[in-house]
Amino acid sequence: MAPAPIALFVYNRPEHLLRTLSALRANSLARGSTLYVFSDGPARRADLEGVETVRRIVKSVEGFKKIRIREQPRNLGLATSIITGVTELASAYGRVIVLEDDLMVAPGFLTYMNDALDRYDEEPPVMQVSGYMFPVEQSKRSGQTFLCRVPTSWGWGTWARAWERLNSDSSRMVECLRSHPERREAFNLNGAYPYFDHLSLQAQGKLDVWGVRWYASMFAAGGLCLYPGQSLVQNIGMDGTGIHCGRSSYFEVELSVSEKWKFPDRIEESETEFQAIRSFLIGLRTQGKSGGIADLVSRLRGVAGRMRRVIPYAG
Image 1 (cartoon, rainbow, N blue to C red):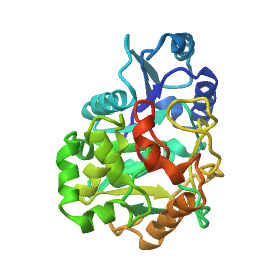
Image 2 (spheres, one colour):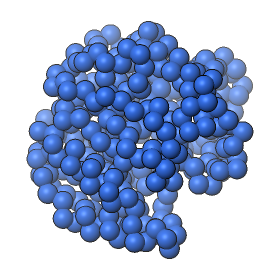
Image 3 (tube, helix red, strand yellow):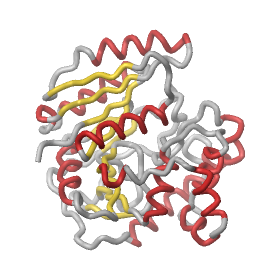
């Protein structure tokens, strides 16, 4: 099967984009892949120069089978941009790999993503493939993979048959979870992270995010996300330069050098890995890490107009 198309969402950080493209081109499957670049329009006048520089860069990109560029004349925002772009490519190709302009990938990223998309193509419970893995204590198991309920948004892929289950009616999902406390607790990873609060704010129009809607849709469907035992993606944007992430070093990882992966045959969540991710997120909150995650909920309403995500689930 031909490699899945790559959707790359860019905005106004040319230096980060150059590093992202360089790492992506280093993948052996890059030359056989079609790269779609989605360039959002400037949200304010101060962003115009960066947006124009980024667009000049993508017009000169080489190293891929084909390059297609989508330039928006006005600002759609990250949520609308990603939903629109992923929907377009998933519908056209049946599958898609998704990146943003502040993500560096390992040399084996595209191989892993395409192998996983092939392996679980006809497994409806598997709804996403993640390239990023949290830096939990045992996250250096090269070549290993596992399934977990919560997805990430830092280098991921999905299928049309899964993406069509995206539910844009956040209010209805909020009411469903509110009326079932045990489900709401499970949605929050048993108290590890306030996903329900994010979904509620999104439903109220106070938080412009897409990932929490996708997670809620997956959760309602009993969907699972495939993870690598060691991360294939590094977020280089948490340096204070972007509007989507604050400054933090707690999500930094050592990239995998694997070229082959062992995929689980049993379609079920790994309890061991779920608890590892859950413990990592709890640790961030209790130790006040990740750029202020400990007081995130109390600050959400004040920054909702400009905030997009703090951890890699909710773009």
